[in-house]
Amino acid sequence: MNKRKIINDPVYGFITIPYEIIYDIVEHPWFQRLRRIQQLGLSHLVYPGAIHTRFHHALGAMHLMGKAINVLRTKGKEITEKEAEAATIAILLHDIGHGPFSHALEKTILTNVHHEELSILFMQKLNRQLNNRLSLAIDIFTGKYHKKFLHQLVSSQLDVDRLDYLTRDSYFTGVHEGVIGYDRLIEMMDVENDELVIEQKGIYSVEKFIIARRVMYWQVYLHKTVICAEQMLIKTLKRAKYLAKSGTHLFATPALHFFLYHDVELKDFNTNVELLDMYAHLDDTDIYASLKEWERCDDKVLSFLSRGIINRKLFRIELESEPISAQKINKITSSVKSAYNIQDEFDLQYYVFNDVTTNSAYNLEANNINIQLRSRNVVDVTSASDHLNLAALAGTVVKHYICYPKEN
Image (tube, rainbow, N blue to C red; front, side, top):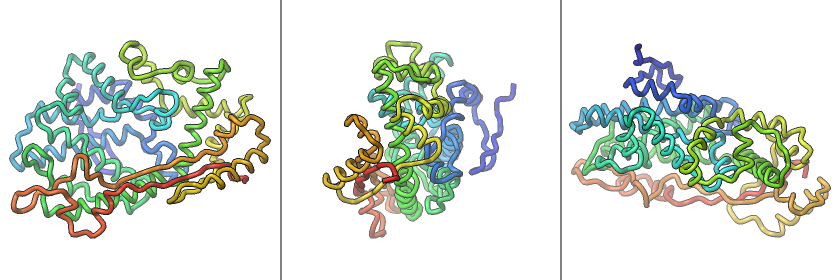
């Protein structure tokens, strides 16, 4: 059977499956599940074109990994065929642990379980199914392999994961300010002292990459309406979890029903061999099907929130640089309580909620983007750059928000 398939990607054109084992992984039900998980969650409520999936992204990142490996090889860096295959597998599976609306799910129906931890569990189980052919890929993914730069291609501040999602997300949202020169960035990659570096002549592409990342976060990923929609979903799932723990019968697909009615921590995935398979049955359709049923449920809070998400009747959100004053919160809360005739103070948390969101376009303290000067010295990009604002982008931006129904 010919497993060297060609895929027509809207961003890069034709993508080739480089290894037969990649085909086997892509055909696996756990990977096919990524077709049913949107890359940007509820961002399509703001950008209607943002309906691409994690399946698209994984294949795109795999494609860019192949390009990066080829570039490094042409510059004399030794990357064996086994290492190339393993690095390709590692990037292909880097998001395999994502659930539907990943961050909303992690904060509600799971207890402190991060998708990267689940990705490792999926890889380990796949490794057993595929006769330990993923062992090297797992070592690269977890940073245990002695060639550090291979891990940096998978996970760092300038990895092929970020190169693809910025390119792909800007394409599908239509936010052209997020477009980066991914091809030039890859061509400028090199390795010095086992560290991934960018040649000095690629510094302007790095500057644009960092600025584009900042734009994409505040214009797409942390757009105030996207924040509001995700917080409404978090509140909806928390309410459903609360009702489930209270013994209320709720409609839910079998997989979602299990996680609503059971408290699941990371250790449970290690002790219950069937739990990962149950999680692998969760995708966006489970959440949407349940929301559509919850619109008509007896609990008015769950019904109100579900109806708001399904019909895009989103709350108002106010985003400010300074903390929301207690006086303002109390005034809004009092108004909402009266308008919706809320008798139980406990229910108010689902109608009025405030928090903070933070982002840093570049982190000076972790996995720096290193520039290789013509002298062969390696320095951090903020030191090599003459862009006046680049160092400032390393600072963390904090924004405070409050959400409440628009009728008030």
